[in-house]
Length: 221
Image (cartoon, rainbow, N blue to C red; front, side, top):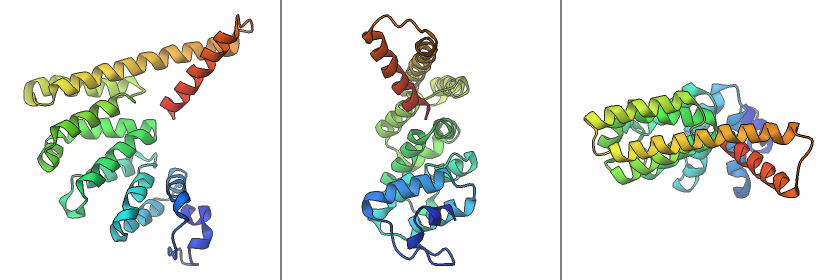
């Protein structure tokens, strides 16, 4: 198990978790163990820890589970947020959803698709339109490809017909996604100019170029 490789002193020979990593390192261990694992058993193991652990540990574990880049595992975690049999608390569902779209571009795509495909179930289970709308806008602000934007735009069209209560937030989400995509495209152009233009005119242009690079790295990864 890759989690055992990250923190071997906390596992016995059979891979059983014998003690928790240090409190200050847990989020890092959980996230990186899952992000770089190619074995679904690692993800299943950590999910079982979520179900059997104390409440104070569950948020860190959920955030770790959200670090996977495997679309099928991201979908599994998202579906668990609306599955009554998991008995997931509402605040844990929000943690899972937001952690997924903040963790990677794969997570953003998964969150957008999940929201659009399961909107009725989400509303039925959680009912808080303000929180749901804010989560959608926040996720959309991290969209990095045209496919996710197209899915959002299709949802807006559907919302204007069938889900009028969320339509304003959906439209805001599309605008946020369009702005983010435009900024990323401009950033890519600026990065190319920064690296390939050997005649930088001033320290100001250097500074702006570095800021743009930093922004794109945060958005893309």
